[in-house]
Length: 228
Ligand SMILES: NC(=O)c1ccc[n+]([C@@H]2O[C@H](COP(=O)([O-])OP(=O)(O)OC[C@H]3O[C@@H](n4cnc5c(N)ncnc54)[C@H](OP(=O)(O)O)[C@@H]3O)[C@@H](O)[C@H]2O)c1
Image 1: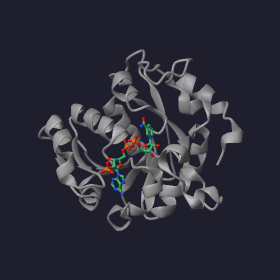
Image 2 (image 1 turned 90 degrees about the vertical axis):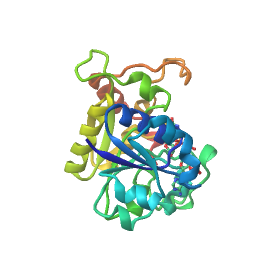
Image 3 (image 1 turned 30 degrees about the vertical axis):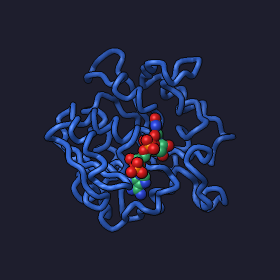
Image 4 (image 1 turned 90 degrees about the horizontal axis):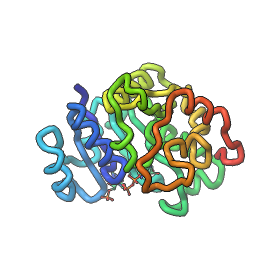
């Protein structure tokens, strides 16, 4: 079993932590306000969960999930994450999360921001295309006919493999899109980003399973106008 460190334990971090504990992993949670504010979530998750500072969560995990608002990316501690596998769930959504000048100015493409901040880490983009409430609803055992596939992208093949293994344990197949730069194919505004929404796009709906074949088609119909 794996220990997963979380920098950010809100909607997506919390949903992933619940799935991880359900799958038998240990989780170390952190947020910006301090471990004591995570008491409720830790109590809900039981003995396989504990709360820590972001630096502690970064060193405790075999795999670290960063799920914070993009504007806070500079606060992610680089030194403890050196050499580690880091899952980047971030989507740049300035209207909801605030602006990041280096993205707006075109200095760093949004999908590469965290890797640029953590040059010594092996960053894999994953879970950025699934609404947090759909994560538990769509998880299925391996081999289930309606198991969903999620896209992942990262420069280090061994890190991609480790993240694909984690996805498998959580109830999802992984579709390796390629290096991190290729993650623009499932960035906000692309068809693949909204794969699990029903045709009306209702977030409240239970979520639509997406097979590898469905996802491949969506990834091929990227809307280039949204590349950034
Ligand atoms: N919501 C979704 O369905 C979804 C799906 C896919 C991807 N994403 C992406 O995932 C990211 C997180 O989204 P979310 O909806 O989970 O956000 P959220 O519910 O607002 O949670 C953000 C979490 O980040 C923590 N945080 C903020 N600054 C931090 C820092 N410097 N160090 C450590 N933790 C920090 C917050 O802690 P405090 O509360 O203590 O500040 C909170 O636990 C965003 O980039 C979003 O675009 C979201």
